[in-house]
Image 1 (cartoon, rainbow, N blue to C red):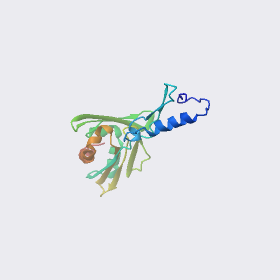
Image 2 (image 1 turned 180 degrees about the vertical axis):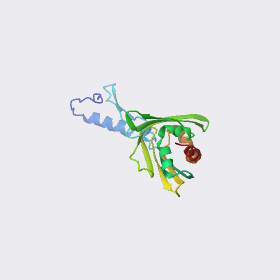
Image 3 (image 1 turned 90 degrees about the horizontal axis):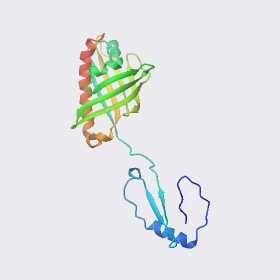
Image 4 (image 1 turned 90 degrees about the vertical axis):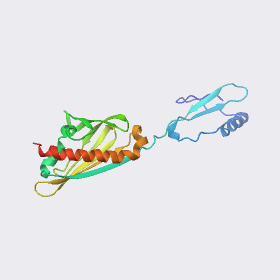
Length: 214
């Protein structure tokens, strides 16, 4: 049996009974490792008949990637400014690094104001963590909702909702959903409460920042 090259179209040949028997014997004796298909490429090596020393190697391909875990965090807080001020303050994306502890920069694309590049930098779990992503702001509802989703980079999405609480205060509720980065998978169970604490601190700083926002 001649070797087949992946991607080529060799002419069809008829296998002899001896060749078919050899093929079946070699194939059924193969022991497959007990690992997920997604973890490695699969290799099948078939030995030809005794009259030939050639072997053919067929490469299988990864069919899918491991499904990563998504986590959700929600925090909320009363902010002692009118709802219109809180909404305007949070809409100022490039000012977010001034009050959100782990966001180091936000840059709005000049030609596409609904898009912005975000950089996260923080030291946690014994390492320096840094991620970036491109986010698109979806159509907002003035004084009610701001929401976004990442287009590339760290997969995440979220929303900020504003609820009136009298003429001079409001409730701000922040929800963030994200795919746990592979780097942080070993500490995934601790990541969610840790990030909720950071988000809560961010809202506390936002409450102070909003009072001086003009």
